[in-house]
Length: 311
Image (cartoon, rainbow, N blue to C red; front, side, top):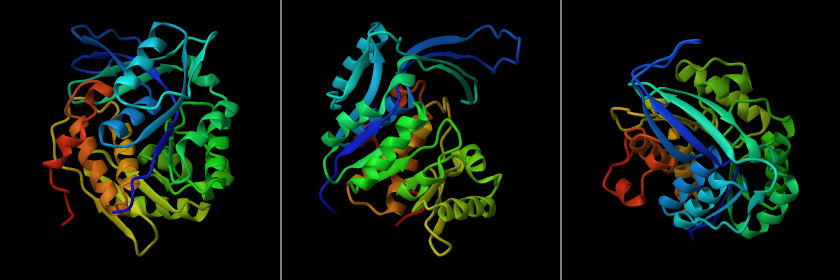
């Protein structure tokens, strides 16, 4: 195993307000009998916390408001042993908030008020990126301005850093970003938006992955929920890596857990196949718990689980 590389996560920080009920409400409907939880969240923050809990050396570039949610978020990052030197406080915009409904099967729907996340600037990324070091992995999502993401991806690539992009929430990407990506990690919906291929089975997952490689991406990992993840680095390097079977309680942040875990495993020198299997294990634990960051496992919880499908 090679020397551990540092991880730089660039992305959003939110406070999640969660209501768990028997079913999700239809438009115009009120569903009674739910349970309320308030948790730290945001895709960037979730991935940073996941990576740190799983043993990564993590720095985080994000922007929070100068409000109680922002102060609580900063304290939480510090408790999680995350380097917060480049967490920026916005004096004008409120911290991001997400309203989440979760049903009895663990499915969810989410509405986000981005607040300060929408004001994370390229210049602030530029100030924080050198702290990542020369051999870092850079992990990003799409809950901050696309222009800031694009700058971070291009600049990281110029510096020779490996970039992992979780293209969520789904949106179109500038074509010149794809060749800068070491790994892209869409789910089925995001893969369809990026490629035009509806992912319903392994054949369509392969076709969507092939199209992403044609755009210039080095490696594709399509997350498939309870089925696991489809790893594609070319026609001769494609496989489904299954997830351990579990009974889901809440799928919130499962994808974030997967991405944080994947990045940690790669930072430790594991192969892509081993890293995806490690990430599937971590995500399978997270869906058995309520909440976003509250559901994210620690490294010791994964050590006792076998890598499903791998020897």
